[in-house]
Figure 1 (cartoon, rainbow, N blue to C red):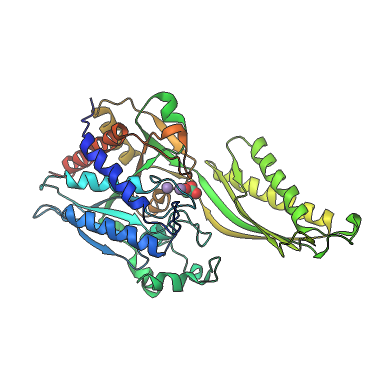
Figure 2 (spheres, protein in one colour; figure 1 turned 30 degrees about the vertical axis):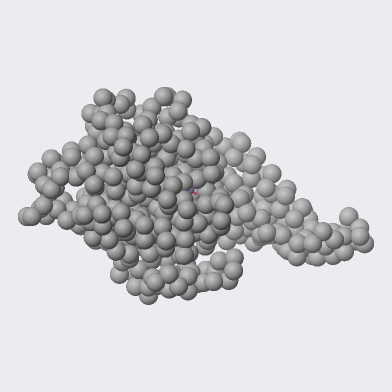
Length: 413
Ligand code: GLV
Ligand code: MN
Ligand code: MN
């Protein structure tokens, strides 16, 4: 049977509520990268890290890092736990935050005899909402950050470099914030499932096998603006109608490719007036698959379709790939330890892939990674209705604590 410490789980849920109050928009949770709301959430997490006996600091991009040193003489390296503190627009309160808070709860329960250091990372950006490119926090840690991204601008025209500086970060020091792989024993992330499988299986937690690959692109159709009352339909070069045809093609592509998901989540129309034929329609595209070849084939097909639809309407189609993250497999050794911890907690082992992206995907470039999913109500996420139970959170704390214990034995405790 799992050891159900429901009072610690209740503390975790209470902390998630407190973090949810750190928002850019009154009345709903929106906490994008490098905003005062994110800094405020980070301050709370620093406070909780210190209360758990950790040193707390921020790195150059604003990741919050808590470190608990090993027992005297312990030099086995570092185990990293964590997840992210940024959110989507009108978010739920657990996507990302739960992984940070469960990690902290585990550190609070650690004994003094660990042969390795434990660090908790609260990453500054995983969702990529503000700059269209995701995983900014973990990319810096993994040494995979592309400095060209610093010149990207948000919707208000603020460059990423200026945004980082405005909250006390150091855009010029990002390369130096990477971690040394030689010191790391692994990265473990607890996260809500964001899907329905655990609920269907009546299980509190499951072990992640791998994370789908993901490509983000910006696609723009450019036609000619004109008078909505005078330009005959046959003579129009309407960018939005071209975009609409292509959005339907995106859905059809996913519908006919097993395992593919494809989403247009943003659309900007210019000039954007009811009596002007749209001259420009700019869209975001997000395409994911567990198989990189299938994802790349779908992208090539969608690019061809954009060009064909544009040509048929006398408009131009431009395509800019913003980010491509390959599919990753979790480390068999570390995921195996996690499975053993699940079993020791008396929970049937469920293995499941992740369609959502996670910091673990980027951290896998640096060290072994494993992920534990926690059941969430209705599989709902990226939605204020996200919900978890204290009982399931207690199981996640128990399993993660058992994992740390197993790793401590493995490394000579
Ligand atoms: C993050 O939640 C993502 O998968 O986009
Ligand atoms: Mn998310
Ligand atoms: Mn997340």
